[in-house]
Image (cartoon, rainbow, N blue to C red; front, top):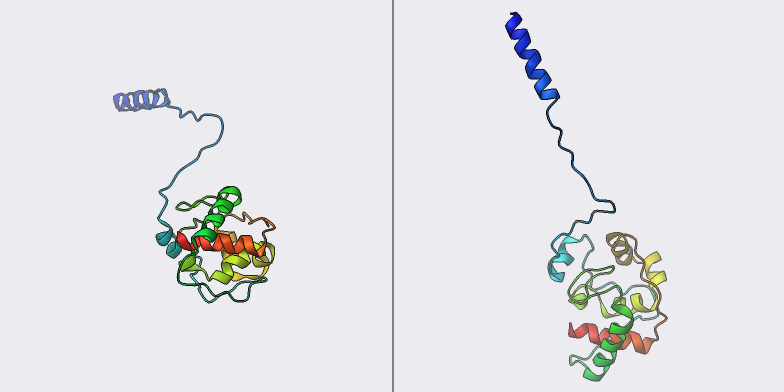
Length: 161
């Protein structure tokens, strides 16, 4: 019995005195990256409904878009996009805001223009804008003080994506 107790004590001592491994973390923060889904796949999974009937809240009640893209207007919109929108939006990837590719398949033209022209009102009153705000960690879309002509050019560019 004495041998068994001695053996148990020796094992406990060996286990207790064994080398302890410590994980060291570098100072700063950790960032984990996840695979970005394609915009069409993301639209279905991000919890924000696709709604082409919602026109939003703002100055644009209706807009008739021709079937053919106005290439001159779209080029002006692309220039504007690359000047002010690119800080928060990419064409194919989520950033601070949603990816823009396929936006015209998820939102009505009126909604898109109203979001550009009246982001404050949209974020207060529109259910889709509120859902997007929640989805994008409460990062508000700031008012860029666009004219209706600027918003229309941007809309034409978004139609090309």
